[in-house]
Length: 98
Image (cartoon, rainbow, N blue to C red; front, side, top):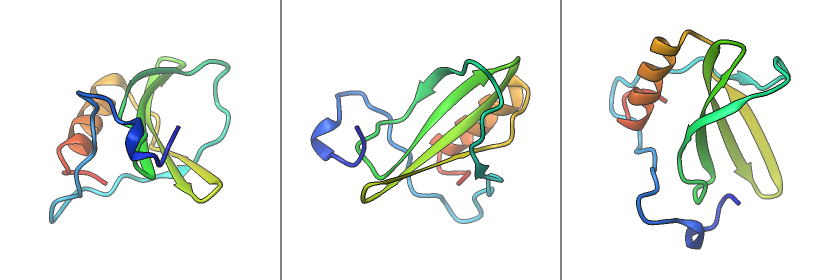
């Protein structure tokens, strides 16, 4: 998983480069906040940075995983209500957030 171009599947979602004026997501280092996290959607993990739309404790957030060599860095967006998280996810997939 992660960083291997041959791992792509037909129909995989890839996040485009951000457009000029893209909104900056306030990423923070991931820390345990819930016993269970449900991954609702995800982007392809063939690139060194991939994303998961997650749900836990009645809130949603985006998890960003960055692979650098053998190091895996995991950050999370703010945990927000579903409507806000879905909008942030749509913006990320459209290149309007980073």
